[in-house]
Amino acid sequence: MAQLQSQHLLTLSIDLRPIVDMGPTPAGARRIVPVAGGEFRGERLRGRVLAEAGADLLLTRADGSFQQDVRLLLRTSDEAVVLMTYRGVRHSTPEVNARIARGEPVAKSDYYLRIAPFFETGAPGYAWLNLIVAVGTGERRPNGVVYEVFEIL
Image (cartoon, rainbow, N blue to C red; front, top):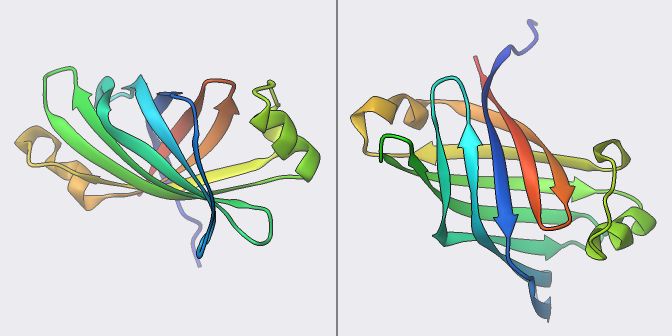
């Protein structure tokens, strides 16, 4: 079986607002992380993350890992609007999780953060985004997150 091939799609930097802690729910400990803005840049698209319609519905699972459920609204440099949704997983040791929660810088090699984004747009120039599968690796920062996103070929 052949290995998957990919090409870099974009670097996505997301600024985050303070976390809203919902506490324990039937699904697990739920926190909402509102998006404050950000930017994205790649060879075929670039622009900004709109703050009006973004959040991560973060779930702490029984095994201590975090499950992401994210919606972002992107506006390209030529004013097209793209909905980006992704699910993801972050896991590490309890000590690293505590450092991230305190807003301390933590090397991305100390934890696992992966996402599977999908895109939706009605803009003809970006219709190709509707047809791709992508994956990404992330780095949590004190007030945000940065992802390197790759299109699977």
